[in-house]
Length: 151
Image (tube, rainbow, N blue to C red; front, side, top):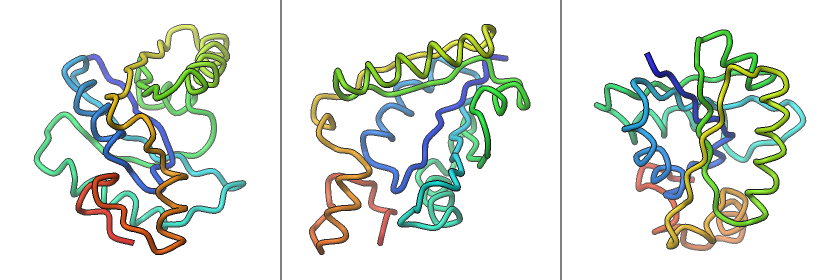
């Protein structure tokens, strides 16, 4: 079985995330959307709310599971038997950042491969941090996040 994870904080999940997930889905038998718990990061939305949103977005998609994890991503992959990490790239800065993480992950666990998918051009400027900033200032996030995401 080709099992992959798509890790992130998803605070909140954006339409860019959804696009990468849908486009990556045909590559794997199972894709686990893995919400990482980072105790050093203060999330805007609770872990439960983020998990619920993602479960609603992908309800009925048999190949997708939504889970949470703590610790190193490669350790989580080993624990659940995932051989692939799916990541989305919006910009060249994303590439440099993700390449470094992917290379270190490979050093830690050479049996786990990182797969990159370029985001659709229309979602290039959309990030969770920008969405959070818009929410903080009372702006409209329509067109940036799935309809299920309600602050």
